[in-house]
Image (cartoon, rainbow, N blue to C red; front, side, top):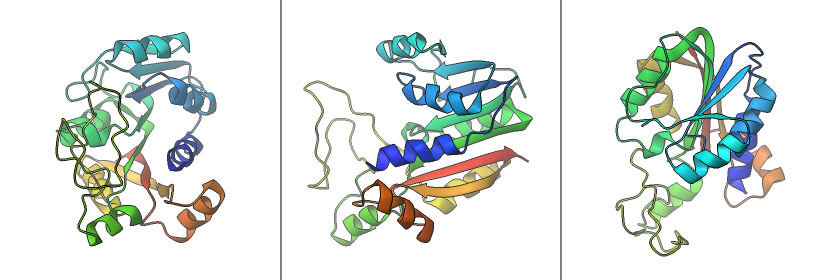
Length: 221
């Protein structure tokens, strides 16, 4: 699946910080966080997660979990964090400037951050627009999924939908990060619908603009 390729691509961008602090902004159940931490090898791993069931699951994996609203101030001192990762979170936030500004504030001068989000310019989104349909990751309602007959609502009854509020192209994400003094040193796409994992890796190397997900790593400027 494209999401599996995306997760692995993000993990491959981890740089070891053996005496440092790793923070996952939106750690979920901690499975991805633990995998990233295995490669980054931090002395301390912190996850930000507000959903109690997911937070409890992350804690069983040895992750320090803090319930903090990612739309506001992060609970860390200026220049105190060695590595930050955030996978499929920024698209849910109404104020992406606050999010990136806070990342830059807490990041050490020697630190790095890896972000991943949906790619608005992926071919499956481009073809949706050509057909006159809503791109799959671009949501118009907090209650229903509409506008694309292939975007199936497979939630259980009464399950809230995590609406996507900001969807990025590669250039938009890179330039917004630069506005907040975060300079790209790795710029990739991951996943390539409808290809399988092996073909996807080739497609992502050949065509870096139209993969399913954006993966960017930044250093503070």
